[in-house]
Image (cartoon, rainbow over all chains, first blue to last red; front, top):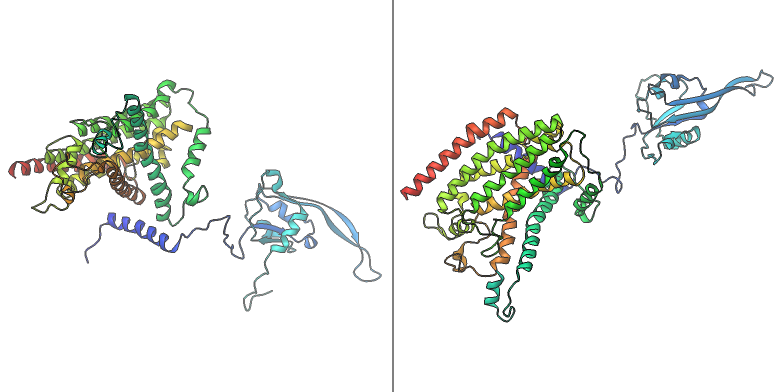
Length: 159
Length: 360
């Protein structure tokens, strides 16, 4: 078969996709009307599991955008065993993430030693006012409900 | 045209003469329709929908059914924007430039015949006039590039000037073959020759010059592509390096006028190409037993424009298809292609047509 000139081949490609779109519909999704399910590990929003947080500040210090604000204080908690000494724990007063600054690098999630931060695939939280993109710890806690179950570890993987 | 209608249907048009003012209004409305309707149709069908489908997406879908009102929304948006001019711009001619470009389009449509009597004017040298006023737009573009006081605009304007002048030559030379074969520069006469002619004794499709002047047709369409600065000849407006060239500084309705002019000119060149090569508004006259243009039935004045629009959309469809498929030429390739390939080819085509015309 003789070689088809590249110019004609190019026209064929565009016409072919035109026909395919007419026949099967477009590859794109008409967003507000229909939605694509993001992959399970998509980086949509960061959720906070407040009970695990010790206000160690590692996430705040490792954040390249400095968009995590943490304030906390030490307080006494009841002893683990009866008769023991009351424990001293860090309690967070404020845990805010400014999503107007966040660049979704995920370093805070990686660096958290106590599994307090999780990725959620939820992505629809745009706001008319930029100040509303500052999510406080209550709102970050609500995102926990959207965090998917962690996938099973591979066989032989150390816990 | 209405005078002839009155002659055929005395009951409908009893002794009815159109006064001059009404004729003028009809001409203005007709001119607006002949310029704006193709522009809107081309933008919606090809720019919004065909290009999107070729990229496996749907294009605008929200404004009106299937996004058909999108263009009105865009026009509304542009009309609201501020009419900006740079500090150092030569403001008076800076503001004039888009109007000159659009003027060239309106001047072009004046000679296009849409039916045996449905035309604005019927110059004996219609095609000569069309090619002459087509180059008025170069002035507008050079003015826009120069008066913007912006280096990108200047580069774009100069590139456009060089390109449009280079590609005007093959266009004129390609038209020459048609003129030689038809023996007339009158556009209606060219249509008549195509629809009454025959090829080697086969007359049922007439003699559309796209067959006998195929090389001329190809050269003409390539030159039109370049005149419209559509890709692959979009070096002057190269958006990735010159940020739209001579249009960089324009905003609001002046940009809108450039935008309308671009696609309206595409439509008008589609009309002219269909007149020159595809038999214009006509169907082969033998189908209805017409001898010449004076026998053509009155209803061709109404069917003719539809045929013209169909042919124009087909031709512009090809122009847009090429535009959406090919990457841009480099500046030197673009000039080399015009001067070293198209012009010699067009000259050879003209010479061959002339020789064959004399021999047969």
